[in-house]
Length: 548
Image 1 (cartoon, one colour):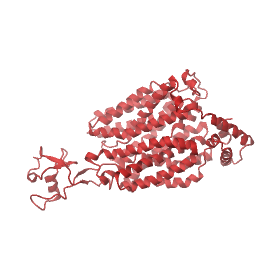
Image 2 (cartoon, rainbow, N blue to C red; image 1 turned 90 degrees about the horizontal axis):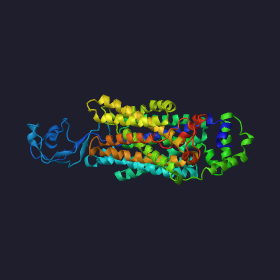
Image 3 (cartoon, one colour; image 1 turned 90 degrees about the vertical axis):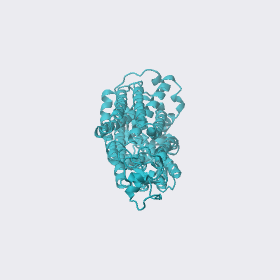
């Protein structure tokens, strides 16, 4: 008997499992609020040189408008220059302000004045992260995602070593403590360090919340759990736009999006440990306690006699046998090496493309809040639509198609003039939806590609590659200072290359899922009898990133 048989016996998707899913929705809603928080706390509002402290060397009692004319050059659009001022006061411009061309300028000498009409305070206004220091606003995002990447490695180990429930509590506490501390940081360096640690803690929530729900639900309902998890991300993403609209101060906004984790800590007491993990680690009596609790909650009856300690002990031995494989087995054989390289490139490309689009929400003629909300809302139909197409045209075509079309949307916007902002906005939103569809597809596709005996190792590796892509995405966006369209060219190229790489992978629709490495090294035969149930049962074991 396998653990899945036990779940069937006690009802693998009843009130007990629904309660777990609901209890873990709150922390999963928090994840996108932090992952995409930089869109608002690191926003750079319009600014100009501060001339209020400069001494007048000519006429006195100048109005503020006249001082700006004398000290600050004007751009072609009529707005003051953001980073430059005249080397010397140009009083002649009071008579004829049109003759300001070719006058010598210098960098701002006395700080900046910011437009606070949209944001009361951001990282940029707090520590003057503008002009030569503008890149530091996006650097905080990369630092956060590096914390997420390191956290994936650490919590992947801790989750298996100390259990899902204990590490989930540790993640809650870390995210709350470092999240709130970052809101009170008094220097940029301290803030960056605390954001790194916040990302580290949030990864534990991402991993453990998914693993706990997946390990308590039977095979046939795991795809439904995936839909719920994906929708929880989208809801959190949309809520972030609302929170940011209502809270304009970056410190208060961080506390606002972190606060729901306090409720998550209170609900932690009702979350059960994974019975599968307990059996795999020899804790048979504790596993029996939770299984009896599940049976009573779902069916109002005790665990049947055939599922008592002796049977559970046999399952314990079977669970332990699955732990003999390591990451080295991903590269030991030729076809596994090829699969490992191709899926690594694919995950890097999907994650880098998704976040490259999600973290770049300006330049479409809409305000930041509306753009972010629409970007989040388009994910819902994209998720639901791709689930339909996956079983019609296959995984490989869906993966390649969504990535290639995403690349095309980005390419179209590179050539569209900014005057056509409404067209650019529609194309950008379509590209965002397609990138989300690519993310949803890659979860399912990857789990069907890796054999059962090494699936968790394969998913751990691809998860690491995706977080690497996420960490690099903000750095790519910084290249706009070199050439305005360079970030879009890079993200477009990554999306297209990743789409072409996916065409080198085998199709898995209506194929028997591989059980051993030999199934990869030798061609698989068609077997459609149990594929749909088996596939839906495994694909969300990989969904331990928030990244969607």
